Length: 189
Image (cartoon, rainbow, N blue to C red; front, top):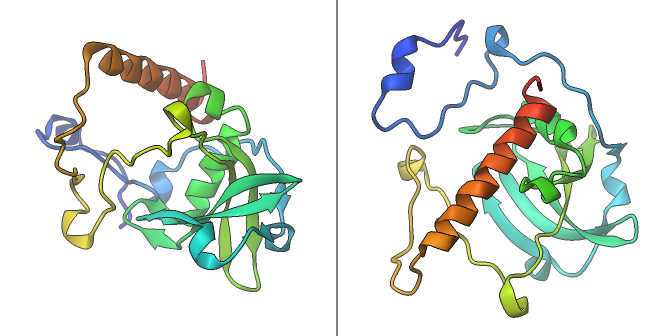
């Protein structure tokens, strides 16, 4: 949409929760250093049928379980242009985050792949560890729909109540993640 600059009034909007500026060349970040290898999609081995390998999907892509470099990984195939922005911009950020993202509360990136023949690109990530007692983690929000692209949807919360310790821990993790992202992909100190 060729936005040249962001008006100051934007930051005073009462319900602004997400802003995508990807694809607007005047607002592009400087080229980021890629800290992970680029691999061919053929290096990713299947771990079973499509149904058992499927881990999830969101606005910008779908995630499946695969094997790479002798370990189980999560592979996100990124859609071209979505409400979240352009695939090439997302790949650039993932590549800059690198492998140590997980320890800083950001999904780590082990490698990126580009398949020119199929026109597909994506990211190879560590799988998210299970929750307490080995139980699978629960999604915080419901998957997006075109009607709710501007606001998250939440399931009825009859069993989850977040105590002070949970909220404080979540806030500490958010600060750690934002600091890490600033240092690695946002221009750094």
